Image (cartoon, rainbow, N blue to C red; front, side):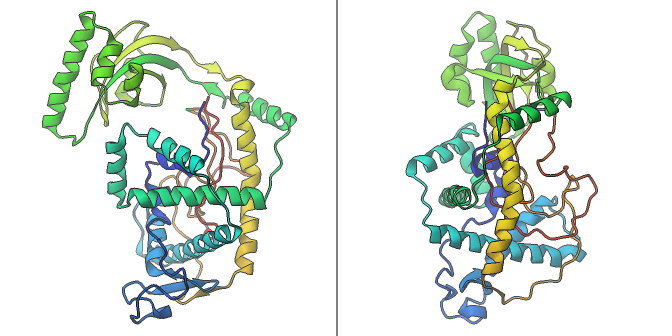
Length: 411
């Protein structure tokens, strides 16, 4: 069973884009309150190209810091911002940048430490979500960030998670609470294990996606299929040819119905035990699959998701306490907006009706990580209903996008 323990896996689930864009490449610019601009004109003696827009307890937050937050907000609402909402994007971006700086300060002052082992495990978990390092690096390049920046962001988020748990301890849910939640979600049909296929998988990954590449890979895949049809051990073929991380285990993988979708699901779940698929094309590459076993849909037992439910309930309590704690920090901090903060007004919604109330894909208004639910079902977020399509956020977000440790309910 898979638990989302940190920002790392949120990043992976969201395609790495949204959760990493904020806060990366900040470096030590302006940490001494002197602007870091080197004597050029502009607020706080910062350079004219990157003036200081905000001061948080005397420390500088630059225009570029705000712009990074604004870029994330634009992605959250689908990449299109009507002109009438530009001031609100700027307002929310400025608030988030100020709050991010404030959280960096409190974590630093608390002396919160992340052990090398913890960081290494988090980084390994992030990279494990991708077929190989080449693909992982391509994602970083696509976003315009370096691996060093990525590692710094992971370290900060781990530090904040530990800091918040120390400052705002949340009692563990009781056995009765866990059982009550399980029964409630089971009655709603939310705790279902979809059909699962245990397979041997040989994957041929697209690198460029060009027609010439696809043609060559299809010939390679067809050659592999003929070898298996002729009696060669498919696990050996997978270890030789597959571009999937399962290559080291002879291509053995489990797929849940709905995980891959499209043609892959249609063809794989139509097979019987022992049958070999034709060559299946997805956006990622070509697939050759042999069925070891297939199981149908079933109810998930409490013991299978007990730990995840426990984290899910703790997440709910944390998400309620986090805004209160953030408001306390903001009230006690000295925040100066050298660049005028635009007036508050309604802001646009995201592609699924989500307003700019904090959080990336996989996060809620507190910026904490949302617990996931079994494939094909959506459990209600603790503390309130999910946003409805077409809704409009009336209040800009206060908390920055700092994840917590919500648990997945996926068995």
